[in-house]
Length: 101
Figure (cartoon, helix red, strand yellow):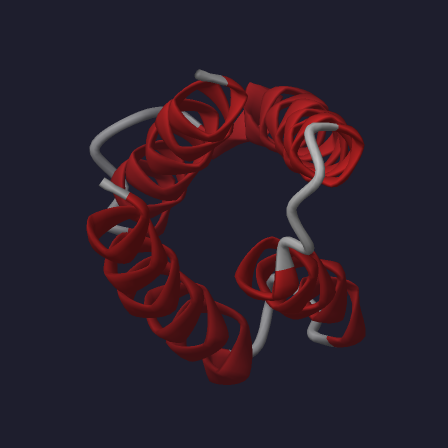
């Protein structure tokens, strides 16, 4: 259940980033919301990982995904690498979610 919440938050943040990058929404207030959503994504995927671990499973894919998402901090939002890495995370996260369910 938590992995679905984490994915939904990631998808909302990813969509919000695309809308801001394509100038569909005003980017002046974008940063606070985007970073707030990112923080919620990280908290929820860490919580999902802990729940899976406490249920007796070893969530390798969730640990990998948390690491990938944490890697997003290495790229400034002003560079092309940021959205490319976000797209890579989206594809990886989608594949992991399909694998889990």
